[in-house]
Length: 330
Image (cartoon, rainbow, N blue to C red; front, top):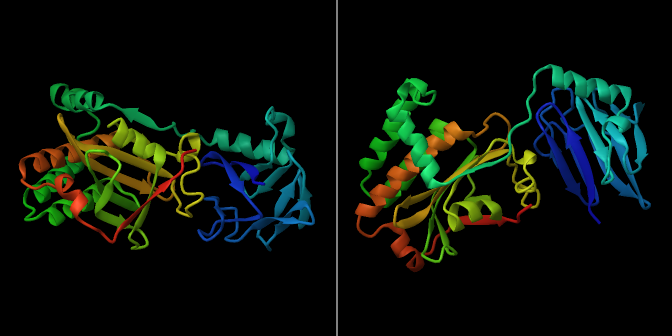
């Protein structure tokens, strides 16, 4: 049966499910990778032993604390507080769990310290209709004094993306150029442009970029629901602040921290969508990034509308080697 950790650190608060064991540390190869400078690369392991759940220190620099006491190894009980570096965790917190009553003096100090350093909780995912996005773009031109979006650098990058798309000689160049410019402008570790047939059930990769140079990318079912079924734009600064997306990547092994996506469409036809994600807090997608993504997706849609033989009309006759994985919803 799955066990649960409530994790609270300066970057976010999240629930993490695990089975027999979970390794915790700063290194990306851990089951739970925490961006905490006070945590060692391989800090601790939690595992089952003789029907008990045990936490063990992996010779970390700053040690582990259970219930306020430093331990090398300890048996965990539901509701136990664990402190690793500047991160506070609770093992199997009950439904009516009172955080303040279960904090040790060390845990209370760390949480108070995080609040005083001005760390803000990231907002949950935001979903916008095409009408809302069009209104936002129109404001850029009709009320420029209120604009905080079209900086010179941003405008140059958008113009470069549009020019590269306009000058593409074939469909491959069109999609790869659009995705390359989009990732360069907005940042991120992975990006993909997907086609969709009329049923919106058959998808095909048209351009893909991944941090590990693989041909696989993970997109959550809730994300597909918004961008395909509802044809809406979405951005999420931190998936761990939204229950709809908090489990993305856990079963697939792909680290996902922030994502954004926009449909590629015209008023009368959906072609597919663009999706970007980031593995950690170095990139957090907000409404400003989504506006840029929607701008590019809209231009790509207008190009596909006038070009004969666009990708959506030929999707069913082609077979690709690239893969897309769909992660289950939270």
